[in-house]
Image (tube, rainbow, N blue to C red; front, side, top):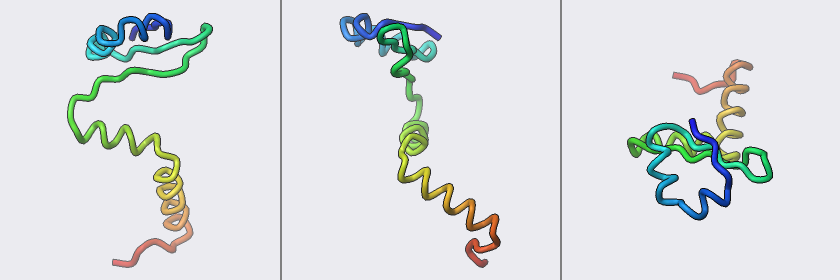
Length: 76
C-alpha cells in the first residue's frame, strides 16, 4: 500500500493508476486520508465495489436482512 499526497496524485495521475495495480494507493489531503485508488481486475469486482459504496443499495440490503431476522423474508 502506498500513501500519496493529493497534489502528487493530481500531477502524476496516470502513474498513480499504474501503481494501484500493485496495491491500494491512499490519497491524503492535509495529512488525512481522503480517497483510495484500487485497481479493478474484473468487471464483477467493479460492480461489487460500486454497489458496496452506494448508500441506497446498502439500505435495501440492511432492510432485507432485518426482514429476514424478523421472519418476514420471502417464502419459497
